[in-house]
Length: 160
Image (cartoon, rainbow, N blue to C red; front, side, top):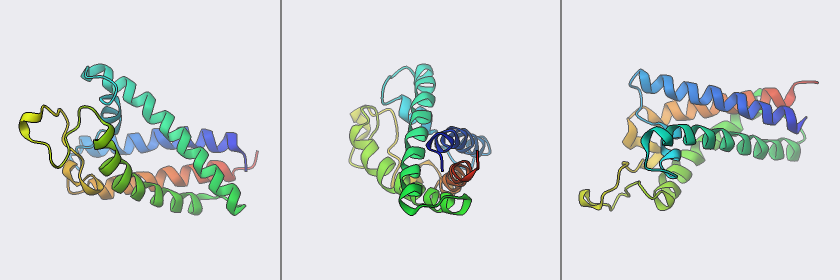
């Protein structure tokens, strides 16, 4: 297992995950836009937020792939199915803890469940498993993260 191949898998997986989420948004299956959410944590300029958010999203994808590499090394194996299992855990953690609990706490432009309309929050809080962004958002997000994990696992297990 190569950390470099796993990292490349993380970048490819992030591209595919982002494409799945963007496609689901265009098909009106979800309103989630993770790069925009990340970017607006840094800037109020909506156009710049998208660009910055994509960079942050790819950095996060790379960092998560390195966490996967640690898991693969600890288990002394890797592969598509193990990567997909990691992706499921990653998706559940991201939807329930990272985006639902931590992001509204640290995001300067996101409301919280206790925010009032007059508070000036620019973004709606995601809610549990990001349900505030659409009923199918949890399934779309989980599927995208499972695909991400499978890609990372595939790259990690590729012989070079």
